[in-house]
Amino acid sequence: MVDNVRPKPPRWRRWGKEALWLLLMALIVSTLLDLWRSPSLPDGAMQAPITLQDGTRTDLATLSQGQPLLVYYWASWCGVCRFTTPVVEQLWQEGGNVLTVALRSGNDGQLQQGMGKKGLGFPTHNDEQGNLAARWQVGVTPTFLIVRDGELVSSTTGWSSRWGLKLRLWWASWSLPA
Image 1: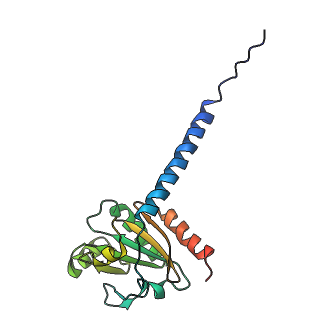
Image 2 (image 1 turned 120 degrees about the vertical axis):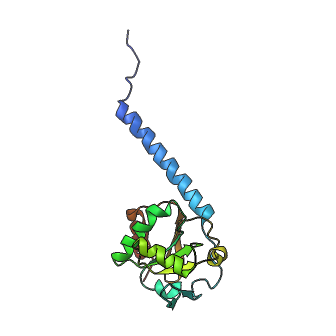
Image 3 (image 1 turned 180 degrees about the vertical axis):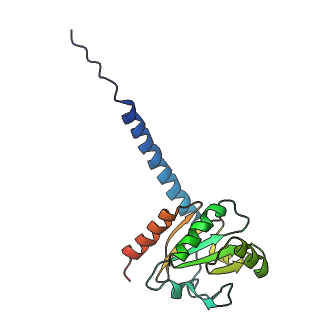
């Protein structure tokens, strides 16, 4: 008599398969959340002047010419931003093209003092009343936008790693013509 019972696959193979399914589901949920939360920039948003903490005026179209620009929405009161802000500062110190928007984080003096205490030097626009965030429909901090040649090419919300941000910037520079 022949026994037709198959041996169970090794435990590591079953766990690996479950881990892959879990990773795939997390990727799908994360992508759907990013699509749902993605900001809707109004016409002319890329050319609209933005005043930085140091008093200079610029716009996203100019800053993103030829090199992808990381626009980082953060807030001094945001818990997740405590982990992502140092990563953005590091990218900026390494020569990354970065512009940040501080959302409802106090007046210019309070923001400058808070940034100084944390050793933050990246270029920042103070969205004290949240007007820019409202126009762009940014409702979650942190929010990361990747802009290339005046076009929004990618956005994500929530925690992101240094390598995740670098990969998004690399992808934007590689996938679009200069």
